[in-house]
Length: 379
Image 1 (spheres, one colour):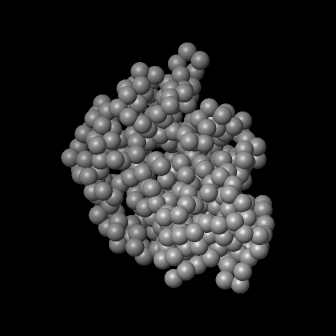
Image 2: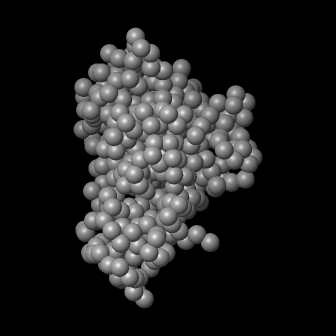
């Protein structure tokens, strides 16, 4: 099957007005052209063709959480992601009962094979090797601090692509070293690590700050800690929840100036209330309240994930930093693909997957295309 797409092409760098041809799901041609043909799928000469966004951290959407471990939950998140311009994502399991987590990992091929929107490309585990003092919106009783066989078994399945660890815990360094051996991206977060503890983790290899500044010890001018080292270390990338709630716009700009497009990336950290009316929803064992702007624990009013869509994160990022479109597309697609070593996605290039998002000039999603097939169109 041959599909043609016409518009202003960003690879993520600006290429020009032209045409992308996708054959059997793979990009086979990218050429400049001034006018569309009848065969072209297009939103007009002003529409933008960009690499499909890749969300490495999302828990739920449309009333479902992936911890439910059902095809319905996975498909709900897949459809929500497609509506925000995402073509690939990592369903993210919060720290939960280990038997439930193990079962979802075991059933992942079935759960991920029945989606109709963006493509699940592995799992992200937010824990359970986390610091109870920095539990955020998760139940600290479900955290652990030990090198258990079941944890290594989870990491040996080939399904887990990313896991967040608090590097100061007793067996954290052993687990991090094992993750590097398995090619699993290391997230550092939900942590009170000091500079020395963080340095030991980064000495083992590259890593990523999980939702930078959130659920981690604050940086101090005499004790920079994990966040200070992570922002300065060349082998550490920084993820951001750019919803206007988790980070002040000035902090978003600071992170990007320090890290640059190669070492910064956007995540949604969206939860089950995303895409839903204001109300009360579930996040693991807790109830969260969604008000149209944020998601918070019903009792403590602590931020509990977000209701952010990736296209809004892109627009917010540009508004906060005055960065170029190409920089925003890079941190929404190219950098995330590199983190999970996915060489088939993240750029619009010949030989890569035909995963793209078609946007209007205001960066609102018109269509989302996965493997050349349209999986979302704005009504």
